[in-house]
Image (cartoon, rainbow, N blue to C red; front, side, top):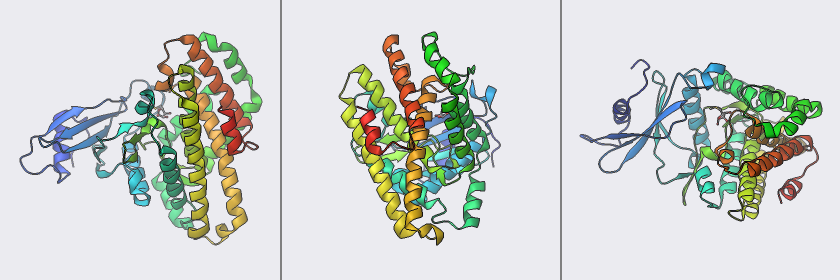
Length: 390
Ligand code: SR1
């Protein structure tokens, strides 16, 4: 085994060559360094016949992140395991992990070069069909088959240990549930937002609800979550929909992923509506609707037909579970909207505004909607959520 070192492009090509049969003998490999978040480095390795693979390696330091949180290289193992585990359940929706090297904290992945990042398609004004359907199926299947409906107690507890991800979960705990509700130095704020921020920071009723959602994130290990399901982590082509970027994976409340995903669509809806570039509302509302219809129908069918645990075969319990999951979805969607508006990890969607007045108005809308979703989550129906997006 090779001790850890940051791979050079040449090392990455040798790594891909060694762990795949794809390239063949005497291949001339080239390595292109793709965009990097700084937390990882990513290479595309190609031979002269156009066959390509991806090497993704976790880096020990990140400008910014590691000054606040210890993030060990173990996150690469978590990512490989979550992707592989979810792929066992629905391979059609996951990037394939061909090899994982623990020492190097490096994954060898299939290259989805026919696909584009969903966020970039949205920026280009495209409205890919069926994303709601795909993500609904992906989350229903991976959620159900990693839950107590199917797994025995001992197997589930072993999985919880395997996917114990304290370091990156702490990033989520701080960035999603803590920082936005106080004047933390990590927040991304502007003076013009001060009236709304003062309200947010003094809103004890809202903060009590966010505390409840945070407690559930910490203590409700229902399903194996992706943990960071925004449209930057979804790749799309005319034929495929693939999920990537699972290093925040862990066991947690099923509504966390469904809520984060819906928030990502709402964020794009509100940003695009403000930019008046395309008819955003019918498309995004339609996708949110299809997503929830598909997710809840698939989850209900699986509960009815595939539940192994005798207690959880109870139909009334199953209905209660789905009702609670919807409420959690709204709550986590609200938290995600608020943290993406004022927190540290501002999304590319918001950073694109050149007119600061329009950006401020969008931020106000996101904060108000985020608050409503959290506070009204016990009453709001899916139809009422869609009505709020008009
Ligand atoms: C660089 S880590 C900060 C945020 O980005 C990721 O996408 C996660 O959402 C995390 O909160």
